[in-house]
Structures are given as structure tokens and as C-alpha cells.
Image 1 (tube, each protein chain N blue to C red):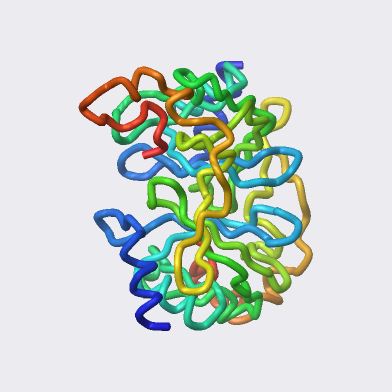
Image 2 (image 1 turned 90 degrees about the horizontal axis):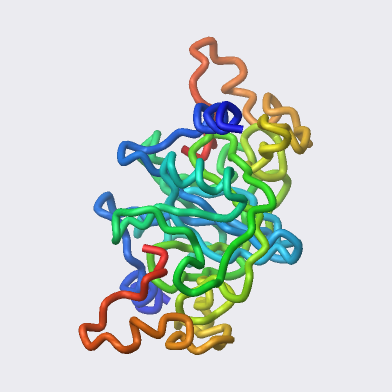
Length: 146
Length: 146
């Protein structure tokens, strides 16, 4: 397994920060859920654990999707693009992908000259992140994709 | 129109290079076609012309998808993610998205410990880029997503 994972990494063109953009797509419906970033350790963790793990650029640490919220992404397949510098993760999203409580992070559409909210939260964000909601400093939610 | 487009731009968080990653998805089938990059001018051109226009990082210029190959992406809707730092373009891909002649750039899947080709080219690449094929310097195809 470890050797196979190292072969995966050899084909991926990480940028000068050691990162590659990764798109998560619900494997059966085709819904694009989010875009996040992965470094080598995030790819290793995702493949070995069978669930999506990203690199949080804001927190500068590995971010096992759902570690706080429970909204895990089970990994169905990892795909690589022609240039080797973008990843597509086919996942089975448990619950919602977005820290706002929506299924997808791409919930704003440009319609009639303005950004329009296309979906409502399925889960109140304060339920996803009870600790954050209690914090008076308004710190960013633990699972924002930044 | 111009004013509305400037309002779009105000909501997008471009990175320090003035770029934002953009995922192109076929609007009806949900297929993820490619990931590329946009700067402000690429967003302006895409919205005003109704077809996807990206920023080519390798060529450092605007890249109207299909300008060489004819494989245009008609823009159905522009979407923005929760953090404002990633775009999703719902498009109607004419022909193929990938410079290899495949429908999607994400044609390699990690299966059984190796990258596996999931699809074959629908169009021979030399048909898409006759000039490139004739060039002995092996220059990158004009529409590689880099």
C-alpha cells in the first residue's frame, strides 16, 4: 500500500507550496461539493484511510474532512487530470460538505446580474460547530475550505 | 452589463497572483471536465461573451477555450463557493474538453494501486491541433490547461 501511494505521488505536480487543488464530487449524483487543497501527506492520508483529507491553508495543518462536524467524505476514487496538476475526488459525502450547512459549497449562482443563493442550509451551522458558535471571538469555522 | 460584472468581481477572492481556480462541469450530465484558472479579465470575458475564457499560466495570456481547437465551452452559469475563492462553471462543452482529445481531463483513476486510463480519446489530438503536430519543437499544445 505504502509503495503504491508513493507511486501516486510521483505523478502529481504539486505547486511551489507543495499543494494541488482537489475537487470533491459526489460519486453517484455528480454534484460538485467543494474545492480544497492537498499536500503529499493529505494524499497519503486520504488513500490509506479511505476518506478525504485536505491541507488547510488557513490553519496550516492536515484537515480530515468531518473531523469536527462528522460530515465525512468516504473516498470512492481518486482521479488525476491530463497535466497532473489537479485532482478529482469521487466521494460519498456524509451529510453536508459546506461549513454553512449546505450540501455543496458552490451555492451562489450569478443570475440576473447578482449572486443568488441557490440552496438553503440543511443543517444549522451552529449544530455542526457548537464550539465555534460559543466562541465570542468569531473565529473561522474549523472546516472552512480555505 | 459592465457594472454587473464588476459586482461579480468584487465578491471573488483572487489570490496573490490575481488568479482563482475554476472547475468546468457539463451542465446536464454533471461530468467534471477540467480545472483551470481565471483572472479578472477572464471572468469579464466569460460573462460578457457567454463562453469560458481562462488565464493560461504557462502562456501568460487569456485563453478562450476552443480558440484553436474549436472545442468551445458555452457558459450556462457561474457559481461561487462559500469562501469566494473558487469558481464553478456550468458549461455546455462542444466536443471535448481535454487537449488529449478526451471528453474530460480527469481520465486517470487510481485503481488497484496504479493510475488507470478510464477513457480513450474521442478525437485524435493531431486533428485538434494540426499546427502543433507539425511543429518539431514539441511545444505544448495550445490548449493544455496549465
